[in-house]
Image 1 (tube, rainbow, N blue to C red):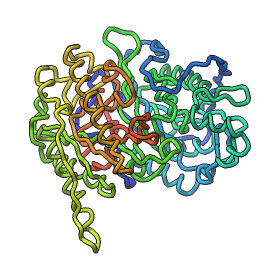
Image 2: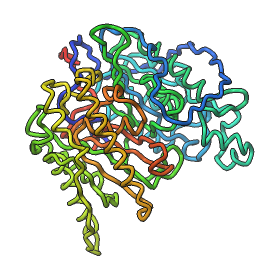
Image 3: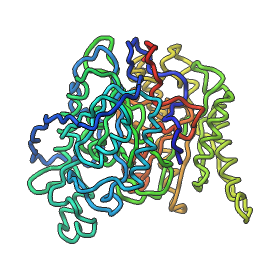
Image 4: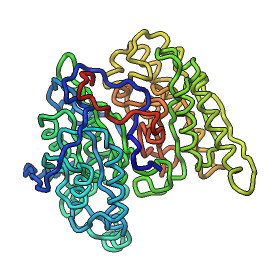
Length: 515
């Protein structure tokens, strides 16, 4: 559990390096909030489409690849979902209705998010006009003087006749239509509308206003589905990714927009997905369904070397602390299989997790140590690939949007193929029918874990520069449809468990020209 006051953290102390004038993209000074809310009435009706394209399978086709104009300076956008609402607690379908308010738990979650972002500074806050999000924004924004800008297009997905229904009421009243909403939401039609397609159109419209605003650091407070759509449309992912990129109550996601030296649409990097006030490995549903199969991608702790030989180097003191913190985070899981790269740092991290797992059952009255299988997988190794590259941009401490472009195509292809082979092996490991509740923990270099994540999302090698992972971070992927169904990404680059041994999501850079 993330306690109030913990920084929303990253691992290695290097970030996206760009010449940048204060206030920087990761400069977030909190200012004061006026109770008056200025509304931007800029929504346009979305035209629904009647084409019958099959959006169910994940694909790597870009959705509007030229969506964004060239940028001269970087911009960081931090997305937060509202805290638990009364209708969340009741299990009602909210959609864009405005009848629910934050529960006591939701207020506490909003306060935790405020503490998570306490040392970050924002130039502007955009909010949904709905009460549950607006209240969350007010709590996080605190005593700043600037107005919160509400944008009607940031409202939650429009679900028309479904709004206000409990799940069993929706099944009883709408039958087949409700089943399609649950199983094939992108092609779901209700009251003459395609809600998910309309939502994607709205999210694209929101980005145009967010990115042209004269600001470098932006806070956006909205809802589950619309935040999913914002992440997906920023990265160029279509409606088939609905319910794949989770957004928990008060979960924080971060997108970096980095100018290209040659101009054109900026690089876009998902720096973090769904860093939550609660533990990311706690029980709960994935996209509304129970998942008994899970893969947890662990990045090894910081090493003694900051160059491309890091995978063959032992961890330094910080890395040892990070690996122990990761082991403690996974303490309550029943992990029976840990697979690591053969490098020194991944092996040390895997052993730390195994020791804590094996000792877990001895913490109570009945001391029955259990055995955790640890094994190495050559396809998770990265040392022999990155050691051939002298470019600093491929090391764990400097992954950045566009870093993949610095790799020679041959090396990137080899890295991609290796992570693809490893991903298939992990799915085979997960498919053991003798273990219905199977959790596989994988420990590797951040570059390999990025490859595994991209393969999970059925992307291509060119997408590897679109993700950022820090040393000591974890990424959690659930499989509610089994190991060969689509993975649901619960979080990416989660680092809150590292506490004081990390840096905030955005370091204050008011006097720093480094992005």
